[in-house]
Length: 175
Image 1 (cartoon, rainbow, N blue to C red):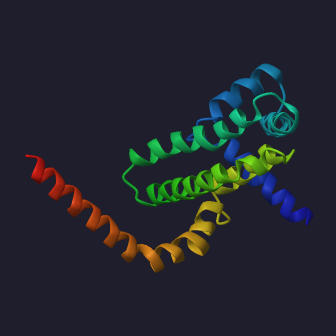
Image 2 (cartoon, rainbow, N blue to C red; image 1 turned 180 degrees about the horizontal axis):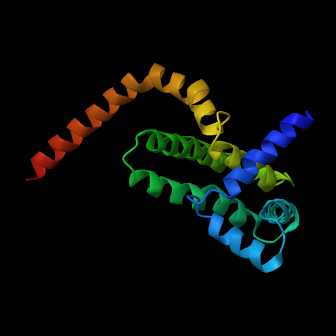
């Protein structure tokens, strides 16, 4: 267990020093001004955000910002690269994010009464975007979304094609 914790700490430290990431320059500046190692700055920020999500004002905004801002930035970055893998990763994130958001809309009355909801949702959204083999969006896509899609896509495609044909005929008659 201690070996795994040390390994995770090393991976996190490596990610926090990765010059290609948008947070590196901010963490370097905070580290230089405060003299506090960026790993501790990061862990402190995570603890503060977690407490804010439980007790703070506008927890929904904070949670949704975590689930939207970095993924949007990373998606734009992926669009601008020539690699396909990063595009697939972020498209998968947005598909799972959209499905979750739709389900959340219908469960809103229930989740509003759950005191740790925003913290748990934020952890879930972070799990969906983590850059490891345990990436939640890829796991959920492979296990739930893809099998459901493969089972039902031909029926949905048929309905969409009929709707398109009906709309085309309707528009042609109006000319």
